[in-house]
Length: 132
Image 1 (cartoon, rainbow, N blue to C red):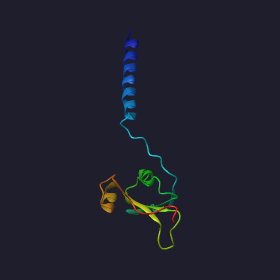
Image 2: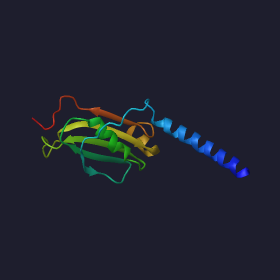
Image 3: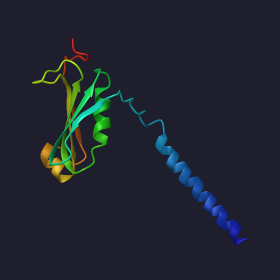
Image 4: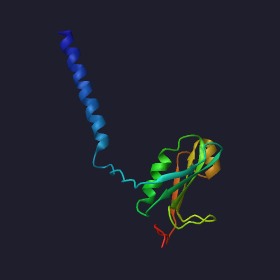
């Protein structure tokens, strides 16, 4: 008899947990943005301020690209993300499409001026990719 009661309690607890965890995927959540293809051309791996240079072949979904890159930056540092078009740049100047930054930890906050864990994204207006 005690085993039946214990089994009933466990079943009720499991059902409650399943109901709670499935509510996280409710219609209130935004669908994940589709991330266009990109390439990390250069990434600093040490220091308090780190630059990550990304190349893309289109201006579509630049903020989704930035967010995908930023989500993967987890070491304490201030990150500066440059998104460039793969065409139209020169040896002296990139075809910059967008800039962003992310603060990770106190060092990142001091380096970027952002609060820990925060990001900032800014598209460069009037840029095209492929370059015209």
